[in-house]
Length: 227
Image 1 (cartoon, rainbow, N blue to C red):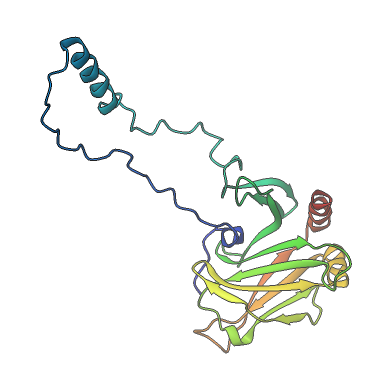
Image 2 (spheres, rainbow, N blue to C red; image 1 turned 90 degrees about the horizontal axis):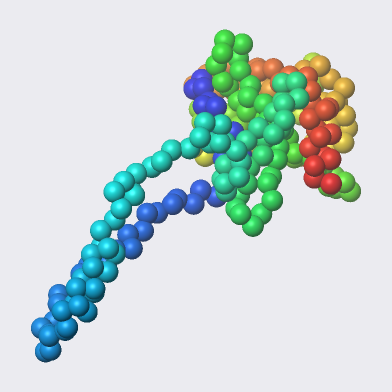
């Protein structure tokens, strides 16, 4: 089963706006024949101004670098940063644009015990009053058997099965809601199990552990940020 790269699912939420380098220089129009000759001092002054405008300062096109530690400060639109760490969960935030506030999620990269990345899970508290108390996104490799869906269980319970929503370059995504009872089970549990089926081996099941260490503190901290 193909391993996932360590790319957060927040990348799917960020509108990637390429920064196109726009050439502001225009082609120099052919000079028209002068019908009258400009005074010498005026012509020299104009030539000096024109030469300054057309000659860039030495090294002005060179990248001056970024101080170490500021690359992921989260200030620029589209940047992502780890705001807090709660046990095995990271509270990650990303800014979609300058005029929008940061969006934060609880994140955990799931491995197979051998150092291989198998899946990702993110959790977001939702406003009270709805059927779902939290929104969950699970990302699995592209070579996943979609018809078998995703199974998420806590501490050996029967669990629930969730369908995939779509597939993108980073993998296949299942987005679903958790009831308050499901959230409480996550808070009280020790570990959850995520089960997926590889497309190349439909008779096999790949189970990865979802640590619940720090989930309660991380979920409560994120809920407090959203209020």
